[in-house]
Length: 273
Image 1 (cartoon, rainbow, N blue to C red):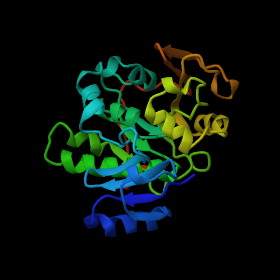
Image 2 (cartoon, helix red, strand yellow; image 1 turned 90 degrees about the vertical axis):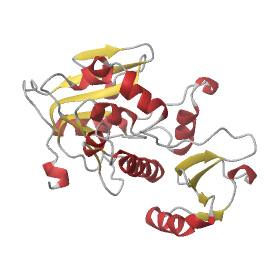
Image 3 (tube, rainbow, N blue to C red; image 1 turned 135 degrees about the vertical axis):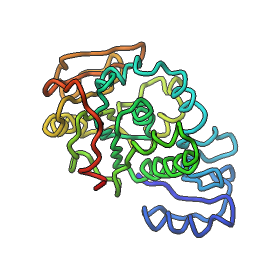
């Protein structure tokens, strides 16, 4: 499913036309999402950036990628560093900073955490709406970080793979492959935060998620990590060698071979640098 695109200021018309042409989004022109009844979701280009916005007068606020403020920045500074479950799962430790392929990148939250802790991260996202949001967020973050000695190195370690490629069709090799496929919506949808509700409406369940694991195991150099809801079944019914569980989620670790004691990310195969 795709989304129509609106823009909120006349100065954004050319940028909106280019974005609609790039991704094939229907362009509704300059309008206010609050005045629309249908569709339920639109992409909204505003001076702040590209946003996913519910329509209607009582709609909640927009969903967008903001790496340099809000919850992302708070987690970077106070989230627990390499003691976080995702860091342990991918094997981050002193001297070991693997190249991670986030093959189901979504809005890039886990990728940003890993990059902030020293990992190199390739981000792959097949849904064009989610890809557009992620690309916009990374571009804005790099602009903010260009003069910041703490932030700039983080975004230099994040590379979004072009053309919203499907990881079930083409999955680049990496030291660690990280998977977080869309899980079916819970019955008590009111308990699900607005981002996940919107994503279930937009993307649906990843019905081919079992294929992701077999693809990842074939190309990962050292391990595959799968993020799941805490009580969810194993991906493809395959039990991991290690589980790292929290209150609401867990990380299933599938080792390929022992990670070396010294390891730094290598972007050469993707970035040509």
